[in-house]
Image (cartoon, rainbow, N blue to C red):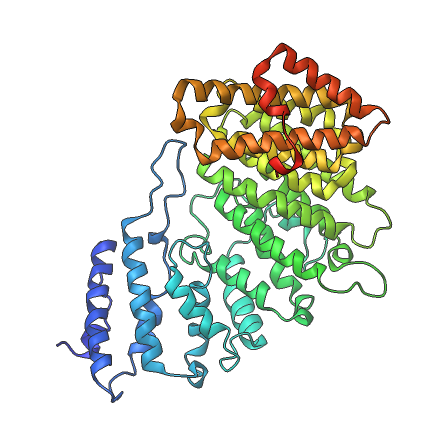
Length: 510
């Protein structure tokens, strides 16, 4: 068997896959060697080599510039790296023993590598590796959440230099001072719209955003405000980046930071940190363009995750920006934009894409719930839009879109029931046509379609809308219940296929 020195060598000049195959072969030999021998005299160089090969690289990421129809399957080297990481961590923990922090010279690099494999959203991690890593990071004996590691080494020593490599600033960055506050006079250093090369935090060190996210989750509450100038600039850089996955990650990280801020009690002045620094509008303006990151300009594989991240972030930001205000009026003005400039315009420009439309329908209830009864002002646009989705002649080809539209409709009925009476006919239009479309598909395709779980659930949800509509109308006017019964009778007399829709009791539907 080769010596430890020979095994702890990374091949140079080979293609990526061949390099990883050679590393994997060396690791297997090293695993046998460290398992069969108890003495550690020649093991001193093993930890540093293992830490070097465990750092993710850009070779594990899909290409950045893709078109709508491009193949975005993961690189072949990714599977090899996952196998390498699992084996390398096992050897590393075996060689070092416990606690790991008894090796002060290795602790900084060790912290970076452990955190780099701790996030489930990263393509290079596996469940087994995350469990190994989290057991170490969460061990009080190891103290990896100490300020000298989180603040001094990760935020100051690693993240800040990577995001400060360019002297040119994006639009949002030019409005922020070095201590993370609103600038009275914005900087004149403008960044190019599209850079020729990817920034180092995205290309050479793709784990950088994972480090930032972990640091924000791990920081002690008392350390957030003193570290504000280390947190805000990288987040703004991510939000202003032209690469959509960077924006998605920026939104996720910002949401975590906002939730941590919301958990802190307001100071005596009654203003949150976001309000005191004046950065709320700057961050809001940096995120809102993401609402229209839609196909075909933004590939569907990038657009859908970005939309799913943008809406929760803006909802959380609206709460933080208006915290301490006596009424919800200011927050409602912000949330109005999510419906007008987000949901409605998104359906207008990207609604032909069923995955984008489904995503927007799934996100609508979160906005409605955040606005409460104030969302009733948008009924004249939302109800017809949802009815159009439900009555689409091609709706049954993709049941998830219909299910998400029904979920959004039920959310509106639950929240805005006191204003729903003028829209009863429009709601019934979508529900009735959808019911009949499903019935036609059942007749044409037979029992196989009829007994599909999603179809059965869809019909149950449609009946649920009828029940909610009855409850809303019954409570709105004194004689509304009779009017609703009369309307249902008139509809079923014209179209007997709808008897099954209206012949429903509370016990028949959720």
